[in-house]
Image (cartoon, rainbow, N blue to C red; front, side, top):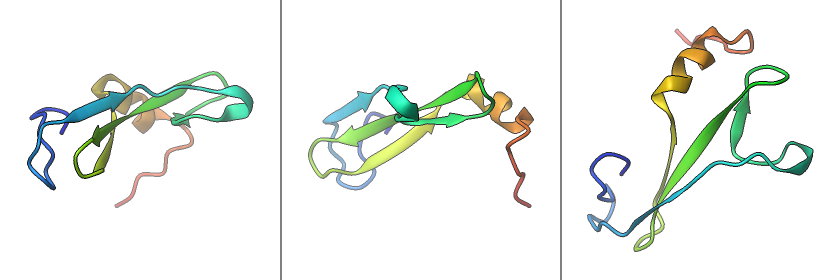
Length: 74
């Protein structure tokens, strides 16, 4: 959905992106990688069928891998 702007479930293109946010008391859609660093997760929603995908920006993927909190799954 992020790149093709088409829902993989229903095939329609009525897609909306919701920006991630950091709310009060640690609420929001993000991954905390250290005390002061967060990686935000963006949601893409199909307004026809309700299918949802979550994406992390490519620039943040390296920060996640280098994080001391990350456990690499093999």
